[in-house]
Amino acid sequence: MAPIKISQVKKTYQGNVTAIHGLDLDIEDGEMVVLVGPSGCGKSTLLRMIAGLETITDGTISIGGEVVNRKEPAERDVAMVFQNYALYPHMSVRQNLEYGLKNRGTPREEIDRRVNEAARVLEIAPFLERKPRQLSGGQRQRVAMGRAIVRQPKAFLFDEPLSNLDAKLRGQMRIEIRRLQRSLKTTSVYVTHDQLEAMTLADRLVVMNAGRIEQVGKPIELYDRPASLFVAGFIGSPPMNLFKLEALSRVTGQDLSTTLPENTDIVGIRPDRIEAGRGAGLHMFGVVELIEPVGGESHLYVRAEGLDQAVIIVVEGPSTLSEGEVLDFVLPLSALHPFNTATGRRTD
Amino acid sequence: MVENRPFLAFLTHLVLIAGVAVIVFPVYIAVVAATHDATAMSSGMMPLWPGAHLWDNLMLTLTHQTPGLPPFWVMAWNSLWMAVIITAGKIAISILSAFAIVYFKFPFRNLAFWLIFITLMLPVEVRIIPTYSVVANLGMLNSYLGLTVPLIASATATFLFRQFFMTIPDELMEAARVDGAGPMKFFRDILLPLSRTNIAALCVILFIFGWMQYLWPMLVTTDRNYYTLMMGVKRMAAVADADPQWNLIMASVVLAMLPPILIVIFMQRLFVKGLVETEK
Image (cartoon, rainbow over all chains, first blue to last red; front, side):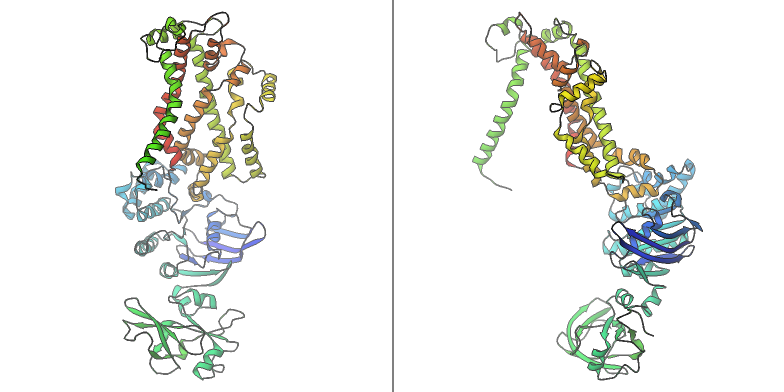
């Protein structure tokens, strides 16, 4: 267990393609940090640099207070869980778990103790003598986790470990990873492009875009107060509605430039903060184009005249409306997020 | 394509059977010839049905020494050695070079690969004079080294292993690195076991390749103790001032065919597995 400190880290590939632009991040001891962002944002590259699988062009990464830039992955004492599990296909599950320990010269009794313990925790004891190909996706995932746990490393690195699983299993494993990490209190870095996974797993969430950090914070902070347009659009499902201020003013007939901070030219609102009916705030109306009932709530796509995209509204329970009906709704002023397009940042 | 056309089925089977017959008939004649005594063979009519002297002919071949040739078992031993050394050498060298080409980044890596690859166009038959000269200058004539070393470098096997290694996900190598395995440990613990079926398939092909060599051993060996079976059989047929003893020659041929057949029979399952599936 150890804190990880990333300072001014850059990654430039051959041909001057910069994947990461001078990035700083402090990960505390025992913390679970999730790196999230669209593909190509550099999150995997960053993880692989921490693991030692990718060289660091500039800057330093230290694990447990020790700069590891020039160390081999094995010397960094980190364990990694890969997206495709990367289990050794010709070895039994037990041999897979033991391999890293054997290479480190761990005594036999200690290996057995740790493997049995990990097998018990992950409930893979019945498969210990099987080959990976005889296991299901979920079981393979557990073995991959087991291989990381038995090492008792300074840090766990997860590279989209759940994206090869089906949705149900993914939910299950997510909870297990969370529980496991909490009980082991091992510093963890988790890379994903799935924002639900990111929100639910993270102690702290790092949203990355184009090789830079957009925002770092507790998941709920990022949700409640996104620092940039990118974060606003990325975190939350269905995504935040973003309106041009000028279009919104025209449609609602209210001059918003005085009530909102200076330089605001784009306004966002979460779909679940829009209220149906007439109340205090910006009043609008539109034709319901599409209703997506998702169980506990319904997503309405409402076409309001004068806006170039549909307004997404989340209402509780099954909707009593039908497609084609006209709906009145209100955007409460307190729920608006003001942004500036040019800087991409929040203006308040 | 699922079709039910009896005539087409008949025709395809006919073509297949004809093809098999073309290949099998000479082998059959060899076996038949090995079962007759010398008088039957010298009558001028080739018998088409097996005779009763197979055992005598085989025994005679194994014990009787043709003038000018070493005993049968010496030639068999030479052939076996040659085939085994070539097989082992080719596999060892090509798997290591494929490992280097796929898993290490070094300058001119691609050039190295293509240099190996274009040697496909230069088999021994093409470069026979320079190769002979090199072997002669190194003093390797009449030795097992001379018989085998020039045939060991193999672009085909290197290419095969390269293609196979490239299908192994990089994450496996990365997982091994994180698990504390250095390059050679990764090679030994992960790559080698995964290549098992490929190696087996290559063993079959290469053993037969080595066993069948005729031209090269004939060039580099003048000492009869280094003669191989293929050369011996040819020489038995080319005796001066006498009729070749076809029954004995064919008995040698039958014996010489046995090792490749045994190899194919026993490694067939692994061989097919190695060619069609990869264990991932």
